[in-house]
Length: 130
Image 1: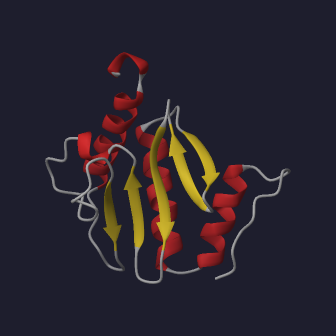
Image 2: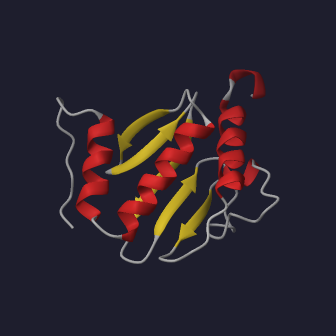
């Protein structure tokens, strides 16, 4: 996979679109689905391109969407502080701050639980929650 470099004239959304297109497999479809769910869960979300990966923020970083050969990893910046009653977090569980969800080809994905997690992460970033 070639590395996508940010051009001053390209928006973050266009760079995320390019990443989804270049993957052209289950990882691209998964990243596209996750992106849609994030936008549905938090309409004020801001898409960014940082560290060569898609990022979603709302008053602070919510999560990143990294793609690897066998995994789409969603790393939540403040995941350790988030409630996870359905057990979506399955990676990065030993850290004190971040938690991640590793998605593999063919995994079942609880969209409603994921959207609840996104809403909780956005709420945690709000100035009133600090």
